[in-house]
Amino acid sequence: MKRITQIILTVLIIIIIIFFSMSSNNQNAQNVTITFWTLQLGTFDKYINNIINEYETSHKNVKIKWIDVPYSEGEKRTLASILTDNPPDLVNLTPDFSLLLAQKNALYTFDKEKLSQFLPSLTEMLKYDDKYFGIPFYATSAVTLYNSALTNYGPKTYDELFKLSAPNGAYLTMINFAENDTLLKILNKYNINSPETINSEKSVRLFSEFKRLYDDNLVPKESITQTHRDALEKYMSGQLEYLVTGANFINMIKENAPEVCKNTKVIPQLTGDTGFYDYSLMNFIIPLKSKHPQIALDFALYFTNKTNQLEFAKMTPILPVNKEALTDDYFKMATENDLASKARITSANQLYNLQPPLPPVKNKKELNTLSANCIQEILIKNAHIKQSLDKFATDWEKL
Image 1 (cartoon, rainbow, N blue to C red):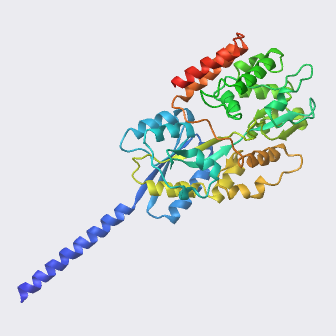
Image 2 (image 1 turned 45 degrees about the horizontal axis):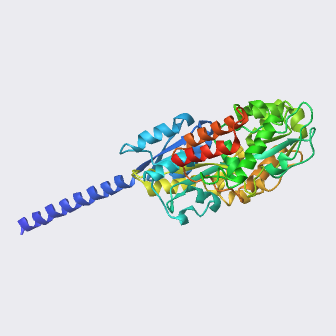
Image 3 (image 1 turned 180 degrees about the vertical axis):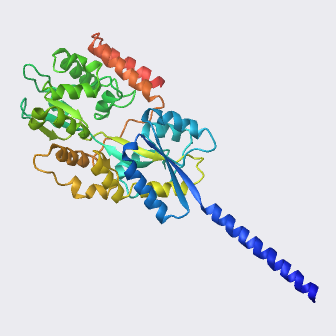
């Protein structure tokens, strides 16, 4: 009997040891660390750390390891990490680079229902092969400024702009023809966005207008080489009637050119014949090799909820992508004589009427180069417009 009792005690001890061992393992399994990368947002460390602390408080088993990456290093570091077996769980990227990763089947994808808190017009831009690969983070959408000391007319379209003249000593506008995808975005507003449409009659007409603006000194000759910052400088010095630019530059105009700022009016971004507006978007992605994709997604959705988005928008001139945040009075009511609030409201309203982006191109930088070469040939070397566009179409097809 004594022996049986000893056996029973031994078995009970073994069961207890196994139970506590399993409990310990389960607890350890539940404690996870999410690695979270952002692009050059270190100046918002207090805001981001507060969100992380709030999330960790309500999710006791989760720790968020935040790393802020220099913007210029983002793509290179992300690609290198994805090639390993231990990538970050959540990464802030641009849609263009995110799309390249999606095309390589390197990203975790999710159902549309998971993105219900965002503007549908933006989530549709983060879809490839009918799968959603990105979570919207924040957006911007340029507005049109005009100097009322030079003109009192606010055009709605580029076609209306083309019909205008400029006063002595000033230019009509400055289009940065060769900067990144500026020209491609303007063409896209006319649904000129493929090898089949780039050499169409509509395209020839647009390039003819660009050529006329250039030859008649209605745009600066430097338009072919300089950037949007140079265009901003010219506007602040009173040399431009109209400028399509980001609302984030309003404060710079106010600080550096108060007289021009006083005369500046804000109107919606110039459109093409589609009537739609273009935009820029930043998003989050979850690498396919993430060890905790569901938790990473949950944190991303928390990070972009109404409260957090609205707070971020009030700290910096960006637009929230959370549809509830966009309904806040902050994006509905402008302060009298406050150019920044008028630009913010104008820009926010444009998110409801967005031009679909260019169809996916794997070699986007090469396409930008083709675009720049084409416009330079036409404007500087007086190349035949139709022939130049035919060559552009052929080279684009090769991409």
